[in-house]
Image 1 (cartoon, one colour):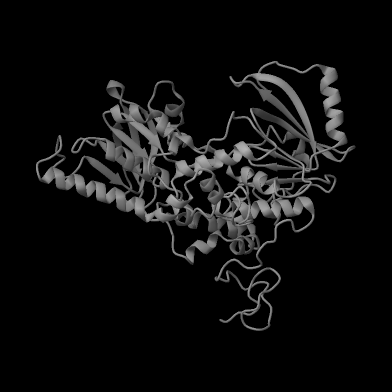
Image 2 (tube, helix red, strand yellow):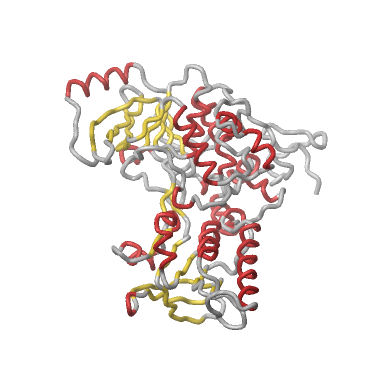
Length: 491
């Protein structure tokens, strides 16, 4: 807990007593897109009492990656609410109407909107939905067995992020939506943590873009969408013939995202149900093989990279540009299948990357002046916040929390309330866990569980693909079973 600000003991006790006397139905920890979706849909449930806490002063969605022209990888219909409630006042189309951009958007014929516009939409929702408390850091969540309520302790922060006051809420249910943190590989952590060393995670890209453009040579590590967007942006902004860029990835290729219509059915509730029904061993083996569903690059971005490289090659062959890497080729090297073993400072303030090519089984040293790590994200640790609940948590064979079909942590029966999770259940629910397209559906499932009724009707079937045989029943071809699957199987 930061700072030392405190409310007076009498006021603190009185506020706690009043909160316990009229507890909240749901407290949300963190306000990213997923909990914002839950808050927006919760606003449409009569009588539901909610509060959501976020330590940041306001909503921002990946501000370091709001590169001009970069688009979402999901259609605009995958906003915070539409796939659960198309009539919600918090839809993206309602946002456009409020901004008087509905007709321009209609004529633009855009199915995938820019990231910056999605961020603006979410900020609009965050400023209108009631019960959102920014500048509030949740410190601990405990189960009060006597009152059969969760105690949620928080610190209210001032404009400088320092403690201003302490508070406590009581709730029947809690939902964790604290998001993910930038992942830095072990080999590069010493450099990334050292002051004044230009090694930055892609989440900080825009903050350091001018510095990177001024650097003599830049290396981008990671072949996901963020890596491609950063490489493309740097490529477009550096002089023709003097690009001095390198793009490395452990993957065997700069591969396109699986974006076929049937392939996208892996991001449906039907596939989530199928995945949950698999054994832990099978799930753990399946996830790494599905990397092209969510860790690759959309084909349009890959095409844009190639087009830009070709344009520069043509300009150099025609005598344009400020240099020549040889034969009219731009000074940009793209190499897949490379793993960074170690890294350190080199001579003249440069950086050295000790690398290994996995297929050639060869090692080498690459020099560069700055590095951008497009190495993804990892789930934020909740050990401190949920320390008091650890004895109640049920875990799988790899010591990960078990999560049931309604996104609840599986707790000991002594805990009558529920702790739900958002984007922390990939090991139990599959590749759709971090996908924005399932945000509204998951929020609706959670709200139905909290209210104990069908506050939001959910579809029984969401995919043409039948992902498995288990649970199928005999009957008329094409009939839907109780889990939303076809009742008959043809093999």
